[in-house]
Each structure stands twice: as C-alpha cells, then as structure tokens.
Image (tube, rainbow, N blue to C red; front, side, top):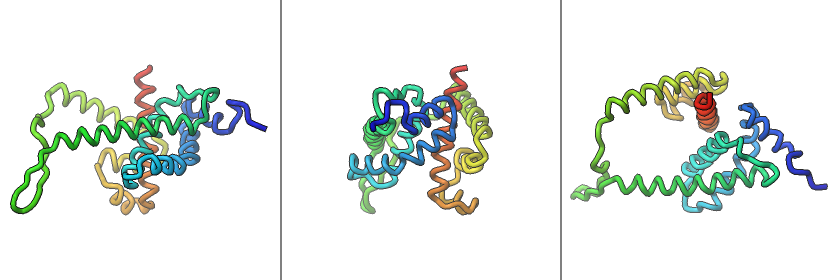
Amino acid sequence: MKEAPGSRPIDSLAAQAAAGDARAFTRLWDTHVEALKAYLHGLLRNLDDFYIDDICSRSFEKAFRQIDSFDNTKSRFFTWLKTIAHNTALDTLEQENRLRSKYVRIDDAAGATTVEGLGSEAPSPIENIIRDEDDARKLACIEGLPDLYREVARRRLVDGLQYQEIAEETGLELNTVRTRIRRAKALIEKMKENGDEE
C-alpha cells in the first residue's frame, strides 16, 4: 500500500527539522548524504570527491535554511533535496569559473605561475565594522552549538585549523571532523537566520 503524503517517516523528520530540531535534520543528513553524493557523482562525472563533498555540504546547508519551504504533498524529501543539489552544483561551477577569470597567468622561463588578479583593495572602515560584527555573531553561534559540534567548530572557524590538524588534536577520524564541521556550519546558518527574524 502506498503511503499518503505527509505520513512517511522522512516527512515527520522534515517537519521536526522545520520546527528547529537540529537532531532531526542530522538524521535527514545521515539518511540521505550517501545517496546525494552518488547522485552528484553521476551528475558531475568530471569532479573529484573534494568538490562533490563541498557541493553536498552546501546543498544540505541550503536545505536546512529552506526547510520551511519543503512541501511533502508535492514531492518526496530526496527529490526536493536533489533539486537543491542540482542548482547548487550549477552555482558552484559558475563561481569557480568566475574565480579563475580573476587570476592572471604569467609564463616565465621557470614555468607557468598563477597570481591573483588586479583590483584587490584593502577593506574600507565600514567593511571592517561589518566583519567585526559578523565575527562576534559567529562566536556567539558557535558557543550555542551542541557539545558534539562546538569544539571542532571553534578550532576550524575561529582558530583556522585545517581538518587534519583538528583530527590529530582531538583524536577524531578525519571524516568525522569534516561531517561535524559541516553540520556545525548548517546549525550556525540556521541560528543566524532565526536571529534575523526576531
């Protein structure tokens, strides 16, 4: 017997996530992350695992921010998630192309060297103020994370450590560090959005 829209367990998790339950969204991540990576590998055959992981992470972050817009009467959660991932992949590729166009290639006797393009300027005073406010807000969000994510998020987003360094310092597996940081970022974005709505 076919399940009615809204009666599936995934729909229940999506509803809980929309109500602000981060654990429900973590379960949605756990349930769909490998299938989404497989979908992205099929869609973007020329991209390596690093880009696939990045696009996958960005897709879940967008889904977390837009979870209120998911309508289980119109589509299944994974179908909705794949649409977000498809659009995120296109955006990522476009950003990469724009980034490459900002670099100048210099060929010399020693070989080709790539340097950053012209036009980089020091931030203005107002940009510094905005950056400082954003940093303070980010720190407050990090402190509001569950214990599971707070320490790795602080080491990555505040101390600027690489994933491998965090793994070595905490004794966690590298993939665990990556996953926790992705989830921490998604939670932080959600907290920022909720703060903006107040």
